[in-house]
Length: 239
Image (cartoon, rainbow, N blue to C red):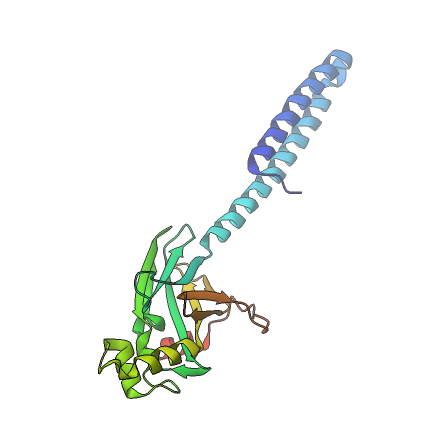
């Protein structure tokens, strides 16, 4: 069990007080050997002080390294007032500024759709101060444009309400049956060169009621926090 710094100082004070009391008792009992006993206690106290100081320094370095980890909290949500609007909230949970790249794969019926949003395809940096949070919004409807089973008329009705009600039923039925998924990738780093590659998270879009639901998968997640994802390496190589 590891002691906190406050507990270490309490222990050190108790040892010093006990040592002073023992030296005083030795002086009363063995006055002739007092100098030798005092020197022994002094050396022991110096050794313990050096050892304890080293441990405290190591604990402080470890704490600093932990605080430098660019931890970010990220989640996808739906705007309850507008079911077409999906928003992403990201918060810097570390004690230092960080920058993050967000990459979202959009799949409809397991077919990946083109990501037209720069901020959500690893193309833009999200810069956050310590403890700061940001919210970004995007419209889900453009991803239905080339999706399986969606005609031009159905897509126009979904996005603009036109060309009329003739496609309304087909669009609503197709929208209800379409399986829309978001696969969220997050990469964050800071000025100290520390970075984290988070395991991807899957969200499913549900209609009636409209929800974005975090999903568990049958695939074991990777634990490659210290490896840059391929989409980040591709961005860096293009700069």
